[in-house]
Image 1 (cartoon, rainbow, N blue to C red):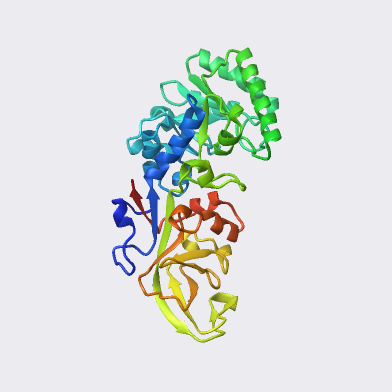
Image 2: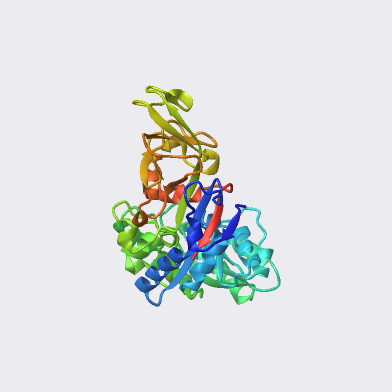
Length: 386
């Protein structure tokens, strides 16, 4: 688990060369998290908002993000597996939590005992929840409406709903929700998935299963397809202030990027023209130049594909990663820039504050903003500002 601490906002940006900043630092803006939840709350009105905090809150810290999201009006928490849910309960969070991805051999005793809702996609999972604990297990039945991943395939819906009705009638489970997940391929495909979900809801009702919560939309559909909001939306990437769209920025959605990723310059050297840098000599200096060594690498989650392409900010000036990113370090050619050992290096943050955008790193690494923030590793200390 990463080191974590809470600090006043002012202390999150020490002066250049300050020894109070750790070598690896992720500053998480909880006020930004609250803003992003409130933006969505205003958009969806009476529809409930689930704050998705799986994968340690997309790398931001699940417990801290969950608390901020609930303060801002989210009413549910969403995680991938029961262990993630149990960690939230251990931290004292009592909001409803849904966990939806399970080991085939999973026992749901701890989920039922801790009032954790369980996503189920098969009769076998229904039976496992029904057999767990003394209280009725709370379930959300997940159906596959075209994404081809987790969720009950259409040919099994009748048997699944029928068995759910039987188990609910016996008082062994409570069907709280019915849900699916969109492909975000395009609006037409997503609307086709909505129609399939409607059919699943009708089929479930025909055998007596009428859960109070129907949910489908994640961040993208929440913004672009109002008809998919239904009883609840699942707010993931948008809660962290990042856009799910290639053609719309976070700022245009009213969102504030919540993570600022920082390192420090650990060595500086002046080198002659045509000096080679890092493994494979994929970069050479064009002239006499200054090289700044930064103590971050792919062991920390910095994508190696960002080599020679990704931006960094040092003393208010932008530079590029120069040469290959190594396991624990990379180099930036700062040319004739004034850089000293100990200077703060910002990889990405809020563009409104002049920082490189996480999307720039995503483009450099040929991936998406989701992956860049989620992969940030446990060697980073996470500091929380509010």
